[in-house]
Each structure stands twice: as structure tokens, then as C-alpha cells.
Image 1 (cartoon, rainbow, N blue to C red):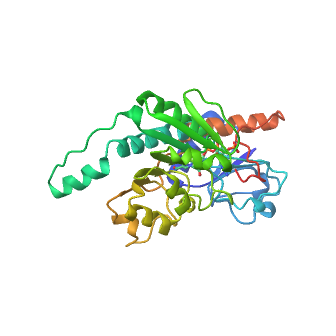
Image 2: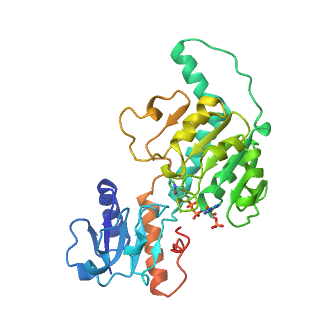
Image 3: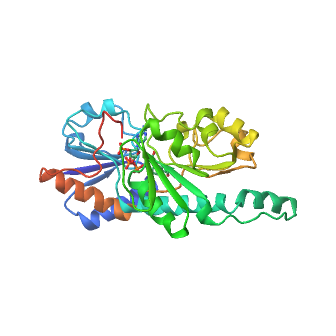
Length: 308
Ligand code: NDP
């Protein structure tokens, strides 16, 4: 029954308190204080320890503490042990806030006004009505869909692109690689909410930027390696892109002096678009453990062949 937590220690203390409250009969341990490893049945981790199969012979479930699992070496998790990513509502709520902020910031020329403020001068910029701004979201999973749902309120012209077809009311949906050029051609603001896989690594590259309407804005909240840095900087310099909001980078944090830190057309944040909220995450983990015991389907179960 024992749960082992190996991630951010400050939030770990909160997890421990919530487990004690909500599942007092379920022992909870904080890495590196693992106790008797044969008692560990459930592991909640950002990056799991290397040799989990031998260290924890009675492991039944492995949770990623985040919504993505690209930081996991899934080959190290024995095939019979389900790997579950965090599907707790706190992640979606905070992601929706961040992408709304980023899209509105680009829509309302925030980067220009930050520059103008620094120069102590105002130059008029005409406001574009939201209905004439086309916002396209790549990746129509739990987060992409939640973001689009909220963006509807502003009246943007919305579209989405996904591997398999989706139908979302009020959103023009495109599916598959063949439909990507048509999707890109009408995305004034492009939001990347894809998982990082062999298919999506480097997807934000020169070819993609060239297909966007000239002067498009980019929001990358997926993963740093989605973006090809040299292509991106060239697209900003040439005006193919007018600005970007980046929450993710490669590596994180970026080294001192990296051009993204000081680029006037880039707003950078430290991979905190969304964060797992212990309060709701503990409920999610307890629910999945209970479902697993009952032999039911597990929400958030990762398909290891797809990689997400
Ligand atoms: P989901 O797995 O719910 O959704 C992923 C979506 O992407 C699916 O709809 C999937 O389509 C689609 N997709 C996958 N591969 C491709 C591809 N090659 N081409 C087109 N579409 C593809 O994930 P979430 O929505 O929960 O999260 C998405 C990502 O957001 C995470 O993997 C993570 O990288 C990032 N993230 C970033 C955070 C941050 O703080 N910056 C926080 C949380 C997540 P299909 O279903 O058809 O396979």
C-alpha cells in the first residue's frame, strides 16, 4: 500500500500532509527516505530512480507528477506496471490561465508596449478585433481543448490541429500531417500544446514558420525541444514571426547570455505555465489507486508505443 514520492520537496511535504488526512492507512514516504523498498507499491515521480524494477520489486503503479512523461525513460518501467500521467484539474486550470494571458498579450501587442515603455515613447498601434485574430492550437488533448474552450469567450477565430480527428464546437479542426499546411496558413497566433515525441521534436522549425501568416505570434507551452532555436531566431529577425511567449526551453533554465533572455520579441517564463496542484493531485492519485485495485481502466494511462 505504501506510496513513495520523488519530486519537488516543498510540494512533497504538502502531499504528505494531504495523504495523512485523506488516506491515513496508506503509508507515504518522501524520497530519499524510502524505508523498506519491498513495501513500495506506488511511485509518484518527476524523474524516477534509475533501477526501479530491482529496487522496488512489488511496485504496482508509477505516476508522473506532471502531465507529460517525456522526462521518463519508459524502458526502465517494467511493461506490466501501468504508467499514469497527472490528469488532475489543477494543471488544466493553470494552463488555461497562462495560454489566455499569452494569447491576449500577443493579440494586444504587449511586447511592443513593453519596448515602448522602456523607450518612454508611445506609438499608436491599431487594435485588431478578436474576431479577426485567428488562434490555432496544436495538440487537442486535455489541455488544448481546455484552452480553446476558454478562448471562445473572447471571440477569436479558433482552430486546432491534432493527430486523430476531433470535433469541437466553434473550432475548425484539422487532423494529420497532410492537413498541417492548411492549418498553419490561417494561424495568426500559434499555440503548441503537443507532447514531446519522436514525431513532434523540432516541429516548430523553419518550414513551419514559413507556412504561418507573416508576422504570426507563437506560444510554446509544450516542451523546449519542440522548437528549433536557430530557425526560430531567424524567423523573428526576418519578421516571419512578430513575437513569442515561451514557457519551455532546452535546457531549463537557459544558460546565462542565451539570446532568448534578452530578445525584445520574446517573453520568457520558467516552465511554470501550469503546475500540479497537490490538493487535487492527491485526489487523482487516490482515485487511480482505487480503480487499479478494482481492476478498472485507469485515466491518464500512458500508451508507451505512442509515448504519451
Ligand atoms: P494529451 O495527451 O491529453 O494530448 C496530447 C494531444 O496531442 C493529443 O490530442 C494527441 O492526439 C496530440 N498529438 C500527439 N502527437 C501528435 C502529433 N504527432 N501530431 C499531432 N497531434 C499529436 O496531453 P495534454 O493535453 O495533457 O498535455 C500536452 C502537453 O503539454 C504535455 O505533453 C506537455 O508536454 C505539455 N505541458 C506543459 C506544461 C507547462 O507547464 N508548460 C504543463 C503540462 C503539460 P491523439 O489523441 O490523436 O493521439
